[in-house]
Amino acid sequence: MHTRWCANPLVFLARVDPQMNLTDTTDDPEDTPQSAAARTRAATRSTWVSVAVNLVLTATQITVGIFAKSQGLIADGIHSLSDLVADGVVLLASHHSKKDADTDHPYGHQRFETAASLALGLLLLAVGVGMLWSAVHKLEAPETVQQVHVAALWVAGVALVSKELLFRYMMAVAQRVKSSMLVANAWHARSDAASSLVVGIGIIGNLAGYPILDPIAALIVGFMVARMGWEFGWTAMHDLMDRAVDEQEVAAIRQTLVDTPGVAGVHDVRTRKMGDMIVVDAHLEVDATISVEAGHDIAVLARQRVLQRHRVLNLMTHVDPWKRPDRDHTPAADAATTP
Image 1 (cartoon, helix red, strand yellow):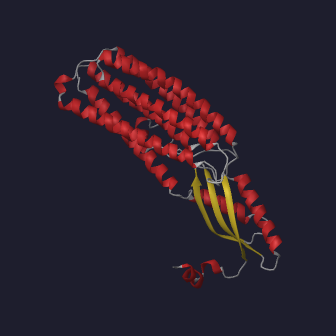
Image 2: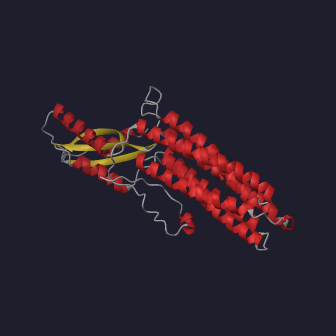
């Protein structure tokens, strides 16, 4: 089986790179297991690469932006600086999410990754709003906009290439280990590549005799960053509220249960995300004449098959007699549980 991972890409980025197939990262119905140790090593290694790239770019973009009098390049440098902070959040999340389950966290600490994605989203949103505020003030006084030095264009070009290469590297790692947190950080790198492209266009316009294009570029970058932050934050918030996985993956899990020897039917399959893993509840229908022990063995086998074939952290099963009324959902049972 091949493996892919849903990156939740933003539609507006397709306008920057229309050749990119944004559907290439959709979920497969089944996944091969990835060890927690491998996921942590990959996250740490790729994030430290990002730290090195962003550290160099931040220092270069802000320094050259100040001396070259380019607000767009300075904004791009601040964006790179936000990447450094984001990398710190990812490293912290990777450290905590690998902890084993304990009394207070019986399902483990996988949701620390989701919380990290939420933090990344909020960070991007704050940085984007700050960029918008600064650019608007500059546009209100266009006479203060100065012509930039050509060195700013060279730095913007280097930043564009560096960020695009970093995005492709981090996305490949994220897809391989199936980490939504790394996907979020990879698209953060892509947002920097897109912003560097916009900044480069603004600098070219400034050098061509249209100084106002530089703060306009900074304004566009701010909007892109803020929108990406909103998207990631909104997605992470829903995941923290026990959002179910997509219908394709639910159907694949259901099929695995149905194909289990001894299972005559399946109903009430419910899922909720736990970081990059899934917690599943399901009712299994078995022959009503078999023993409790036999029904238990069927449920154990069904659980093992699901955990082997899907990215499922835990499966809670309830055994029902086949072709008999499910009294868990009769009106009388529902009324009895109503306070």
